[in-house]
Length: 377
Image (tube, rainbow, N blue to C red):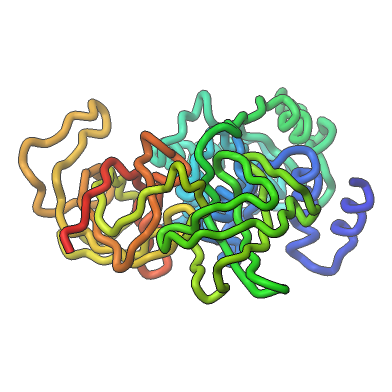
């Protein structure tokens, strides 16, 4: 670990130097995304977050004056990453207020509290409980202050340093007895057809026969690698590379799902969902088109009907159909995808039942699948 620290800290690569603490994070706990305020290249579809998420997500916020404001303004990546985190099912959000050593900050408690006060209302709006789900801590990624050990520079901070806090978090347990669900994130040819993805549920063994949905191809697992180490067996939560027999690489798309024949995942084009409009300037009406990100699948969808509004405080549903919805409102709507996709209801399978809607390169809404609607055509 110290070698990784040294390499990253002395690197001429700005991003690697800034994020050298992420190496320690990956070796101590599979948390997941290390982000930097306002740096667009760190955005990835929901899979990137969900692919290594078990319980917590780390979000790094710059305290430097100007950088924090840029990352948090509308369209900034701080807001976007928080929305994606909640959609991916993150239960505990660790927010590192970084660059506290910057001359514009100088370990100021006032600046630290200012960043917190601006972040909390938005995180609460997304769905996090500030008292239970969020933990803030100051740090300096450049000097390592308050990462492994507490620092006298922030004596006003009484909590654990970053690594100690990670080690105190509970483990997230998944059932290996559940139905096999492995969303495909990528595929390529290498002495056959190779697919990559995270096993969300169940267990997979070498030589096992599986079904590729939604095309219903029967495939056989020729070899199985977990984190690039060959194995005969893999359990839920592992990031896998599988060499398959019985299907060509051209017949697979990201978003396809490997399942066991006894318990296939659902597929279709139409579904009802509860949607929270997070950020959108204009109103949204039936006929509105957006890009759906659900597990590893990216597909164009259209809102074909608005069924009702949902009161955010009471959960009460409106008795009449709304003509439109706008920012900060919650609604139940019917959506139709351009093509057949694999999905489950949020109640039955949260990992495959939550999604984001994006438009013009920005996340505008988060949602969960309530009901699968049979296609008429």
